[in-house]
Image (cartoon, rainbow, N blue to C red):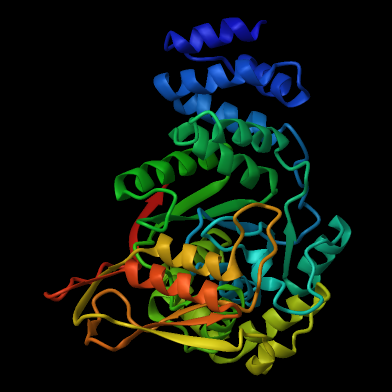
Length: 436
């Protein structure tokens, strides 16, 4: 078998066999197939596409290129949740303790933020001493004893994907549906869960800007998960404005804690409940959406979800005191309001620009090596559909550097689209995608 022949075959629009795909991924991972040949293959895939069977085979080959976690030692049905990334997306912080408090084990791999989207691990490090660098033995023990553990992705989890993505990033072959879907799902399948719930963002602040593309990606990933033997579903959620009001690590932690106390933003709570409902149904804990939502409301109301979050923080070395006394979380000391320059109605908030504004304050990473300031961020005061008068506060900046605050203010003003006529509010839940 030769890579040259496989490139020629795909260039001609023919399907690659399972054996050919595994040969290609194994060879690329171990270095026997050079970058220039894999670049030619990814370009051929961009032009010719891949069948559903090819896409599943590619996903499984990348999954099998490294460690596949064995979670058989964890009792119960393990349901994983994945977000394609957005601005103000602190969903895991509220969702996982709610689900764990209801008896569904949460064994989750999470990542750090890069660019204008935030990362779950960065947010959790707002709790002094917290670490995701725990052993597999501790990971399993924590899930069995308290119902929840979150670890960073291991270096050998789907290494083929890491290597392939770096190549796609510099050869203009990132935005091909099969390559995107297999990249995400190879890591999810390697994480060892029994079922997968996907939060696929759509809009300005999302990877997929158009609803049609977001639906296509969700359908592709649900198909992959189902064909790989996992219960899989997706929720398309709005990212044409930030989720909730808070953007920035410590500020988002505060908003998640507010949600666990029953007073979080409506749009954020709706996303948490939509994803949580599917997780509870997949785990066999609830027969329908109404029952699932009632269960989630009950563990918020009785405080057990917040208590579970504190147990989780402590179990991974963190100081859980801020869970009960929010004033202990460190926030930037300089607080600057951003005033509207004209009146009207908010038609749109460019979420990506808000994310970039937060990153410019020091709250995000431009490169993987960038250090971040957990204390900075932005709290929105006006959202889509709201009436605004000139001089009203659109947002509040929390910063530690005057020049960075000035830059963030410019970006925030540019992100708000204010028009004379009232705007129709879009629902935060745009669509559900289930297996055919």
